[in-house]
Structure formats: C-alpha cells, structure tokens
Length: 125
Image (tube, rainbow, N blue to C red; front, side, top):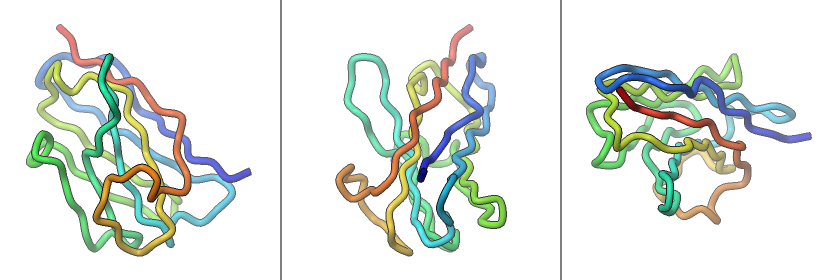
C-alpha cells in the first residue's frame, strides 16, 4: 500500500516551534516533489511550501516565508517542515502531498499523486 504519513503536530504556544514529518511507505519518495498544505477551520486547503525531489529547490507561501523551512532526507524517505515563530494564524491541519516529478511549481491539488491524512497544529496560549 502506498501511503504518506504526517507526524509531529501538536499544541504549541505563540512564538514556539514544531517540526512536521512526512514519511512515505510503499514507494520511494526521492523521485517525487513534495508540497505541504494546510487547512484552517472553515477555510479551504492552501499550499505553504514546496521542495523538489532532490531538495535542490524550495518555495514558500508569503504567509510562512522566513519562518518555515522545508527539507528532506531521501535516505529516510521523509520530508520535513520546520515551523518557527508560530502564531495562532498557523493553526490548521497540515498535509503533505507528493507529485511524480522532480520539480513542481504549483499548489493545484490535482497535480499531486499521493496525500497524507493530515496532522493537527494548534497554536494557542
């Protein structure tokens, strides 16, 4: 079975940090570009970060640039999202998605072949 599993979510105070992981099972993630998305309560899902299959190219949404860092360890079949300086506006369910391409430059959801189930991030004092 081909799956992506996110982990690392939780409750954190404003200004805090979390690192999310996205681990592939049943397929090699190193030939897939990966995106992180998030969905806040009552809103649609939006993209926040992209990383190429080899990790040589990244991109960020304006809302997270300078605070979030996407990286990957292909030996561990895992992509990470380091989130610093969290604010209540970052509260959302975070999803990773994999695209069968070396590079991706879109958050169009239909582009992506595999999706994780999501992990909840709550920023609250």
